Length: 305
Image (tube, rainbow, N blue to C red):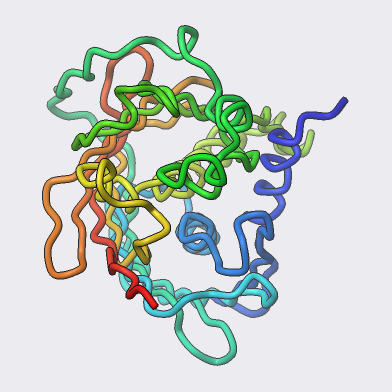
């Protein structure tokens, strides 16, 4: 029996293989499993992939994005890349995602050539390793998902391109309590292979790392804005809150390893004026800090009839 999660992962790899329309203009197809609206992580990843098509031998180290309009899964997305600057060490790109003639997203991305320098890393939180935890999707299906517990994400029973193993197991007493952080182990479900001609060339390591950074951009938006609801979940159901990503920043500090588990450490700092602030990090299983993110999201309470 085929693994639906692996099929999702394989499909995501195809979604990130953009079609070149014209110089600096690319087209991306969409995932359809996340509902009628485009998943923000898909747009972040495709915009990163489009920018990568315009650089050589430098890697994405930071991005700053705004989600301007809801995107639709039934229309492809055009990505227009502006070559803002090509320096010796740093390269800057500006990317606009377009649907139906309107900008739905824009992003500034910076790329950096590898350099030697000072090194340190904040310690990883003390949490159980992934092998001691259960798959979120399996637990959610056992519990009945959001239909049985409205505090649970409506996507909890849907197979994802990544393994997800929450430190606070879904449905547990600790999971249901109000809290400010939500650590989850993630791992991409599919082995990444390149065409044989590329695998045997010096380009392989660069291509594989470029893809890894696009995939971590995708993962960086998984369950991020909903983290700002956690302090209120004892008294507020998710269905009562309209949630959407507003802006998103990410910094990639070190090489991303696709075949290893990453601790996705999400936490919220504040919520006010129908907006919530969330910060997060990706730690390698070895404990080293790989990437950091910050996002502000919409948290608008739905009016009752």
